[in-house]
Length: 399
Ligand SMILES: Cc1cc2nc3c(=O)[nH]c(=O)nc-3n(C[C@H](O)[C@H](O)[C@H](O)COP(=O)(O)O)c2cc1C
Image (cartoon, rainbow, N blue to C red; front, side, top):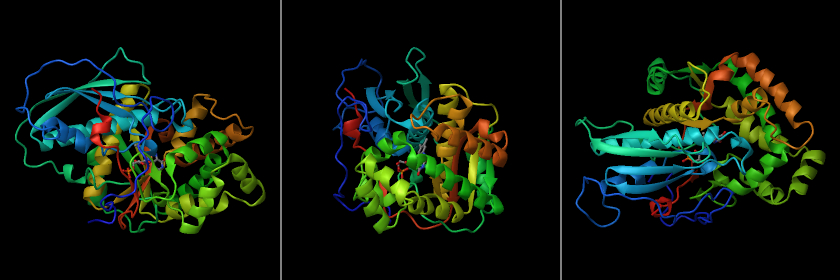
């Protein structure tokens, strides 16, 4: 059993499941269209069908705050409708739906990889008549060419975020070449290493303050962190976020009320310890920070879904190379809000802070900030001892 594997019967946060706003998202149980189609399988017990095996692997795709913004409608053995949603109603990091769209791309890429493992190709088409906040994708499976294994498939469940310190050994040219190849021709991986690593660590340290003093971000963190746990099916366990045990316990208590957060921030420099542990130290302790930069500025939902596919190929490739990744999306998200004049906080001073930080990001990465679709840090190291799990497939199926 790897360190990241949960023990049998691990204590997981309860699966929510009411049709409502909030991190639990929409529930299963809606009746959807269905049609008879040629099948790859003769009828067997539930869970034995190829399509279910593919979806059972694909649900391990990453999503912001483990939101899993998707449900699956199995129309036939060769046809699944992915019902996507975003989290703009409650998540300050997703008010344009872009991170959710990246996650949808990651899911579709993982479906394609899991399908290839079964000797099938998967083709996904977005339905153009659905609103961007609730996209739907028709995924059709067809017999594929027999291929000699699918190298990324073994990494699907092993891939996990490592938010703690990584080794600082530089990435080797073959590792960088494999990661660049993984994102494909439409993107370039830009590396920030050596002295730039410290510059990025400091930038993240400043961005973390924005995250910790904005009431809108507080509401998200309070709801998406599973306190006192190492594993969670629906949230991010507190043991996976990178704090030491004492600070974790203190944060768990403080985070119960916004008034406590404000008090600690104002009188006890409450943001310093978490920012050092969550951003500064890991920002320094890694091989490099990186940006996935699109060659053409992304503007549409399809651009972000395609970028999510590239992100997942790179992340899975990193896993096969025994490298760990932590996304660092805050700078890109808030810099985009500044560019688009998006109002995201009611608290005075937050938006001017975001403008200053966007200028600083621009000074570091130049015009890449505008075309960057994903940012993170990477390095060799040990597997995380705590991680997000996923909702069971049965809960993700709509009938
Ligand atoms: C689009 C996107 C943005 C993310 N942003 C962040 C981030 O800024 N910081 C972070 O620590 N994790 C981030 N994550 C990682 C998710 O929290 C993580 O994938 C999810 O909790 C599932 O955990 P796992 O990847 O370890 O299986 C992001 C993931 C995605 C797909």
